Image 1 (cartoon, helix red, strand yellow):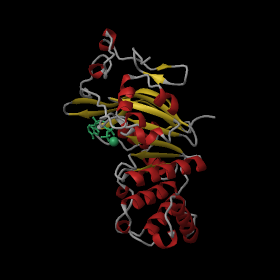
Image 2 (spheres, helix red, strand yellow):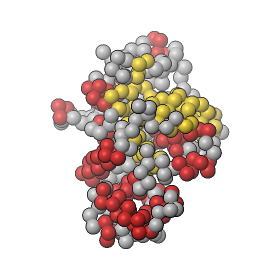
Image 3 (spheres, protein in one colour):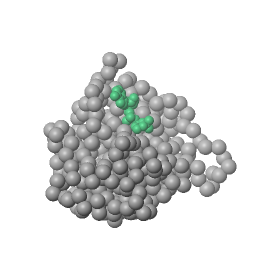
Image 4 (tube, protein in one colour):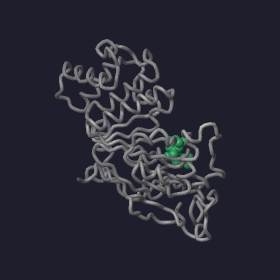
Length: 322
Ligand SMILES: Nc1ncnc2c1ncn2[C@@H]1O[C@H](COP(=O)(O)OP(=O)(O)OP(=O)(O)O)[C@@H](O)[C@H]1O
Ligand SMILES: [Mg+2]
């Protein structure tokens, strides 16, 4: 079966006064129906810009300068802005860290949900739209949806607001959802609930989900595959268990070292020492070389290409972890 989304060698650069900033520089991955892909990396690694590129939301001075974004075989990078706008909110939906990016503070939840349905399909009547909205709220775990949908966004808690924005994202039964740090602002218990709700929903409705987070622990439990980004590139990607169980890139290993786990309880969290090189002035070699404890002389000379390993893992490293 062909994937819902295929990102091939995506390059999104910002043409700033200080020079060309390579925010995304050769990113490739795919997502199948009902699959969850976790896109993980430190702040500034290019996760959000990857998401924005797929959604056609990269603004000046940024531009997609290379690669393809195939959505059900159609290259989104060649779509006219009006067609891309139709795609958003219908076939491709998004969930942001701040649910108020989706919600209008001055309208009742019900009004916003009905509008989201009718904008997409004007043949749906008000009663049917109301019914579908009620069902969607029920699906994300909002009790008494009939009554709650008459409320305004500020009458909900942060966790409930995020559930509403998830319900809105699911309203038109999209094929793909891009969720950028959707649970980061929530407290840990609520975070866990929302994550599992999303996982259940996507499996049930066969929706593909790209889950962006800086926290590997968040996606470790729910993803089919994980892509680890560093300085605008995916340095390692692979099936969830393989990648967590046996990381091959020293950066992934470092990230895992900073995830609290049972057997490390009580020990301080490991930090990866050093700083990310400037995306305006990347070295000729591997961008992780200055922080890597396993670096070889060749790591300074050229950047490693992607290599596919036996276990469907894709790696950019000259000296993989044994
Ligand atoms: N409008 C812009 N102009 C110039 N540079 C930008 C712009 N937007 C983003 N960038 C740069 O692109 C790089 C990638 O940013 P991005 O927002 O994708 O990071 P991220 O991985 O999502 O980080 P975070 O975890 O902090 O959200 C960063 O170096 C950022 O400074
Ligand atoms: Mg971001």
